[in-house]
Image (cartoon, rainbow, N blue to C red; front, top):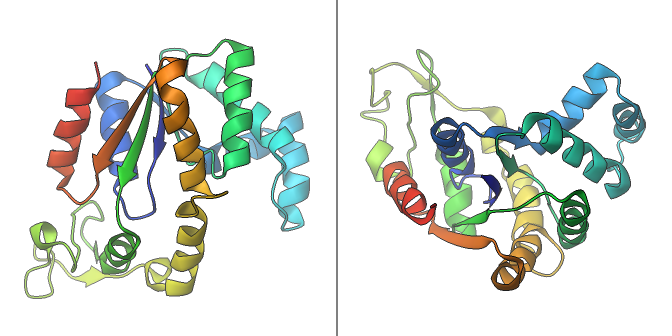
Length: 223
């Protein structure tokens, strides 16, 4: 089973991806990790990517897409979940062409739907338990709201991540994601239009539900 997943920061995409990885024994391939791995291993593609990264420039698609494909082939022999790529319409088109040329099948594309303001509040509302960062706490989500300012699971102290409170950075990431003309949503819509004739299934999920509700809806549509 090969899956491509889309969702804005704050949509729970990482959580659902992790659940799918465990249930179906998929290789969870995240775009940032691909760069780090190739660079640390000193591969030819990694060396080329590092030259751009060191200069603070975006790595060209001509380097990124072969890197993604190579990782899918090496780690995703029993199925993969690609997360964080493509980020724009051009990458979506080039990725699809590359998958076709490599004879790699795409089975599902998942899009987690979440209004932009809700996504931002979820990020800024996250609170981290000092005893266990996996304890879910968020001041904007009733189901996991802290109790009297303490961790709802263990009563521990809570803290915030500095990047969760950087509204300008969050807006910048969301500007890219919610751009329906050239950005990440444009990439998702490219696959949505392609799905009926290309033979894969496009699944839309309401990201405003609970983790369990989203998971159950998703699993019911995977067959």
